[in-house]
Image 1 (cartoon, rainbow, N blue to C red):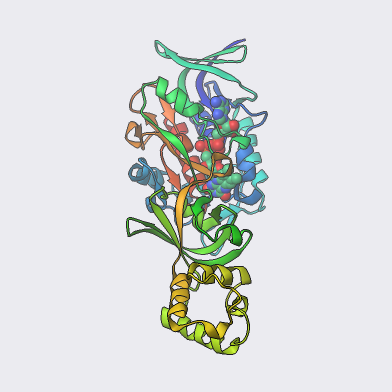
Image 2 (cartoon, protein in one colour):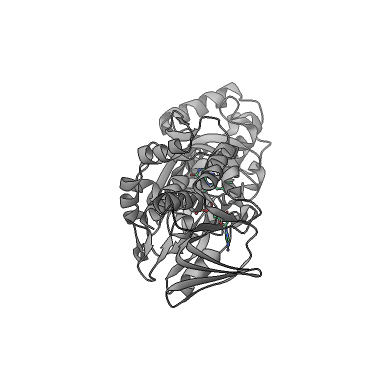
Length: 404
Ligand SMILES: Cc1cc2nc3c(=O)[nH]c(=O)nc-3n(C[C@H](O)[C@H](O)[C@H](O)COP(=O)(O)OP(=O)(O)OC[C@H]3O[C@@H](n4cnc5c(N)ncnc54)[C@H](O)[C@@H]3O)c2cc1C
């Protein structure tokens, strides 16, 4: 089958569906189509926010993002900020609610509502959605784009790359956007997993598998504090996880350390006082009782081990003042050497994608290839957890659609 479209959008996810609706509203007489490789659109969206879809955040600003498009994102958010995005969803009948931290969710608390609002919005506006599209090639010949997918050939006057990144391949993540954009002459940074667990080297990590603790978490690079978070950290046998670690993963590399402050509300002298009290209280008991009332047993043992004590049969009263101080140091700075971010299968997003300087933030138009537009995660920008990535995907999609 051969088909001509005025506007063709590759990718039926967050950015592609918003782009399609905005493009069709702007060009009611034109043929607007979405090519999606999955058997349905919005599969990743359905899994967002643990099935609740944290779709934006009241505190959206460029400071919450990393990547080469970060500085240009300011213009995106000034065109489509929270109010404009909620107006767009309002036009699709979707109402939202914010939690105490400014995270926005659909009022129904179900990601399916967001997908349905977008899916039905496309249907209502007359967007053609073509699923199970197995794209073989994406080229430009003269003024027209030519896309070969399975046995079908699509020709279009304008093309939007909205097919995301390699993050979460089970939900549709591919490197397709990078391949297509490189073919059109763009510089594209290799995708790397982000918003994911960080693998660490530490003698105690295995023993802490399954433990969760509310604490401070700091990312340190060459003795410099890169980012500090407060929240729940989860330990697995090789990695640290949890939302605050996901946020650190945006900036983490092999030369970084993650330091956990297990008692962020207490200063070192108050901690030493509490440790001295426990030394007296549990004087005759073995060391695994030392942290009673302060920590879970496995954290207690990890602290003892990290403080250089290997004989766990010792009594609590045998702890010297020097050893107490070392334990207090490890409570304030339990240190893990970062090795690498966990893989794409565990990543919510990816860093990398098309270089920020090659995309016009006022229109999401390519500055390299005429009539080509890019939105969403295909661009080198990645936000923190809390609705920032979906906000950028939706906003950049709407801007592209309105510019077409
Ligand atoms: C488990 C999980 C939870 C998340 N939760 C949140 C959250 O609560 N809040 C938040 O802000 N962000 C969240 N994110 C991140 C957010 O989902 C993404 O940043 C966002 O979906 C990116 O939008 P996009 O349109 O660029 O890409 P996507 O939404 O991934 O859409 C891209 C679409 O293109 C299709 N596609 C890919 N390659 C091709 C190809 N070659 N040909 C045709 N189609 C193709 C894909 O199947 C997909 O449907 C989460 C991510 C994951 C994985």
